[in-house]
Image (cartoon, rainbow, N blue to C red; front, side, top):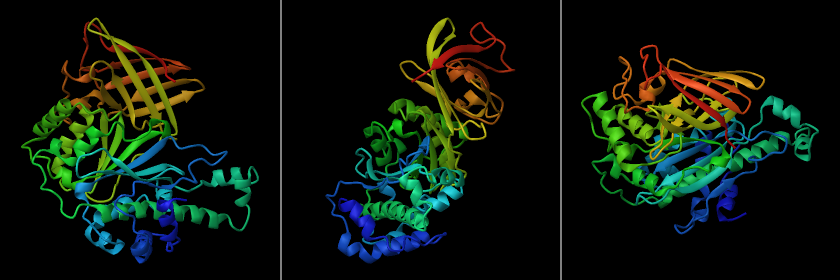
Length: 432
């Protein structure tokens, strides 16, 4: 089982408690045995709770969630009680994902979605995975499908069905919270002074030192970022335009590639930092989806369908590579979708809207989100059209998909000449 897994099993006696205080019970159980099972500082093994990750006859979720904690934001705590007392908002943010039944029930997670707890070290080194597991839960339809189809399903027709789900959920919850406790026990005694520049924080240096935050073969990545200490280093700007200009500039300077990842920021100390962070993430190939001063809120839906396309488009007489990521939820709304312009420095634009399909033929239509206006220095006012912006800032997209082929156009009712054409057109084909 391994030392980390043994800790999860030993320190989970309160795991069956449900509701908003479940995390308190779990941490109390961890506190009761922390002296006898506390991991040593040299322990490198991450805690895993993966029994629910691949259940035969059930689909694997198309999204994974990475909870990334800035170690500079974590106060050292010798036991669970101290962790809860000195890191209350951080613990509450992580705990929103710890009760699998509640998290799936309220839409925070999909059934069996992979959740990883990742630490950005205070020394700026590469991010470390502390925990990885899948939220044990079944929909009503899945439970009915499993009955009688496999030995696992037969367990669900017996009186021990709920006990087995509870046991898996206990291992998952206690493993996640146990990993958080370990991080608190091993956090630095005293944090160094916060740098005056966001790009010099341990968080950003850790992002630079980490080739990728998630394995793309495990689904589209959503990052829950908990980094109040790093966000305190974002300067105060006199205007939205100043903040976004500085954020874009910092991203250009660093050259991070966050691979079209969706970010949800939790435990944010200052709303004023949002404009800078949104521009910094967009310029680094990521999208700021939500911002909360406490636990994550307004989280987006998980994808039910993901399609990828590659191709080319012509602009100003030059051929440019283009890549489309079209992900949609069960109602056909686009989620974490992108159009990415390739080249020496790829630049992506988040795409919001809908997809409607009839067999192999689909139509993608953007909504009022503004599309390439996401790159504006001052969004929300009059549209800004600039050759330096992706797609010149055009706001509308239409894509027609027929099987493995697709064609689309980017246009705007305010613009009738884009490099000698009324719009920007492209042809793409399915990738992979």
